[in-house]
Image (cartoon, rainbow, N blue to C red; front, side, top):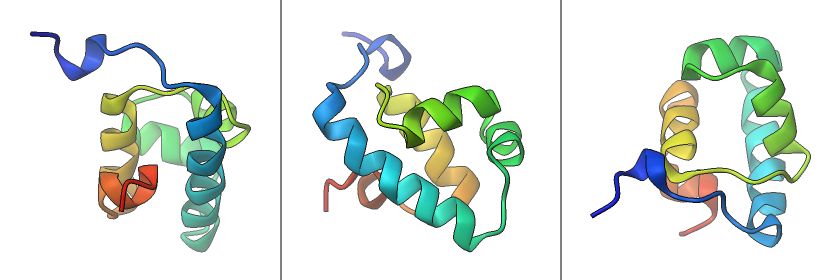
Length: 79
């Protein structure tokens, strides 16, 4: 059984929608990419890459959702 942190990056098609939702949530909270990254334990560059449609892992979505106080499922578009 693989841990979430070992999951491969998601395909770009799914990442584009996540990026739009992530940017919207971040801007609504008046957070910079660096500040959101700090709160989520990832780099600001990683936040920017996800917002721009780059790949992501399940554990990253969970960390970002926690930092934004939203559900991971909603952030990832699974609901």
